[in-house]
Amino acid sequence: MDRIPILKLRNLLLVSIQVDMHDRLAMQLQDELTAKISETGARGVLIDISSLDIVDSFIGRMIANIAAMARVLDAETVVVGMQPAVAITLVELGLNLPGVRTALNVDKGMALLESATRAVEDLPDVDARHTE
Amino acid sequence: MSAATDAVIPRVLKTNEATLLEEWLKEQLGAFRAAAKISETELRGQSKEFLNLLQQATQAGQVTDIRGPSFGRVRDMLGDVSRARSLQGFSPSETAMFVFSLKRPLFARIRNELSGDADSLATVTWSATELLDKLGLFTTEVYQKSREEVITRQQQELLELSTPVVKLWDGILALPMIGTLDSARTQIVMESLLQRIVETGADIAIIDITGVPTVDTLTAQHLLKTVTAARLMGADCIISGIRPQIAQTIVHLGVDLGAVITKATLADAFRRALEMTGQRDRVLKPRA
Image (cartoon, rainbow over all chains, first blue to last red; front, side, top):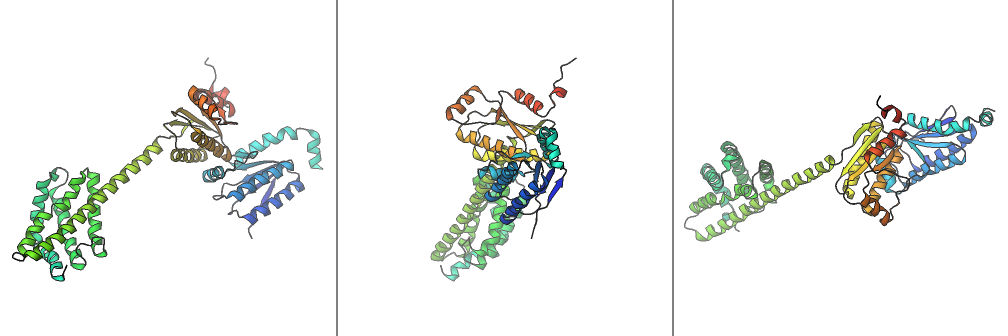
């Protein structure tokens, strides 16, 4: 059974989808990621989908859902490395993923997350809460 | 048609091969001044091969059934000849003349062969006419088809040429659009823009529509789709070059350009793009 690894990188979670996404895998990722966010108190989630060539409406919706859930758990989500074909497909399916931040690659996604979470991290009590 | 008359055409082709070839060549050279476009040696080669294949084909099966399997090689050869001729700039009638000019020499040979038997002569002449007419029409068909292929290819090339994606600065792409935007074209625009975004890792894409004469709801929707797709990939889009009439149309149509950044000119859009990528101070330094 395929598994999508979730890596913790400082206060970020890095998810790199390297296999063909199917429905069960997406559900599993959703479960594991939300669990991991609340477990680690991560401030940001980076989902790298640069190896994903095929999406359908379900997977598109899952990506939007995962981003929304992460936001509820107080973690910013950035989807990085979307292929042109995937972007066109999602637009044609009417899935504009509003509210999901995007970036061209992991590097830029990381910079975006850093600038988005820095404002919050500067507050001392927030930092203290997560190092406890 | 009986077997006896059926066998006449292949027999005539076989026994008179050399004479037929010479007469046919003379006919072809007389009928149109092909010499200017094609050398006599090449013409001779083509004619000889065609006679040879035709003889084999008529011997093997139904004389007038040119769609049948026995005519496969004749069709291939004729197809090649007419495709080559369409590319060499022959007119359709010049191309079809290749086959039609065989009529006179062939009929003469058939008359020699069947002199005295008027009935068979009429039958055989008829089937020979039918055969050559069908082959001639086939040539024209292939000619037409290859011309259409050329047109389609040129259209495609024109489409690709008309939508260049240029790099303006580090991380800034520009897409100057000229001409009417239809679905097929927007598709190509969208694909080439997204592809270039991946290749160059650009953060900002400026879509300049100065050269787009009219914008309707469909065009606006295509533009919005392109912008959304670019955003999904992590690049921001700026639409520039919106002329006053187009601004009016967009509002009258009730198109919501919403979150898309729009600028009047490419220069404004470029300035904004530099600001967004944090390069403005470096680039737009006042001259000392």
